[in-house]
Image (tube, rainbow, N blue to C red; front, side, top):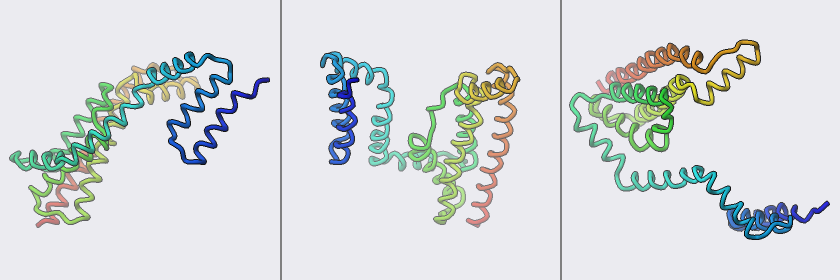
Length: 223
């Protein structure tokens, strides 16, 4: 047997031990493995290029996060707060309830990436909720401010978790279908999705009540 291609493993171990650039180490190991296995160098590079092209969506995250960071650095959160401060009658309860409804509906349509903690909650929803709470109840104590941030994050979680199961092509529905089928209960994804609707409605009502309860507690604390 030809053990030379295993030299790629040694290159990875040595490169990481010497703290070389991880990307350089991995690419070097891949090239060495391919060449030592008898492949043409051009063929190895083509294989690397094809793998990168097929999985290029993985790199999108590394583009989005710096963009969000730059937007925050140049005042995105401040602008979000200013927008809410300029809306008459805006309250934290109304804002987060609307966002909960938006998150559930879009998740039910399969648009699960329209929201999220890094791209929506931190730069937009949480600052807007804080501004609405301060507009209604005055300056917030540090503890209350953290509660508003936590409720903003929880609203995103609840909306996504109970909304996405209505979309029958989501992975969670297929997992549930597989479990039921293994126990002798053949159900279609559409049947499971339909029965997820009452759960989503209950989640909206319960979490909406939690949002309004926090808003009322902040009002009593401000008074």
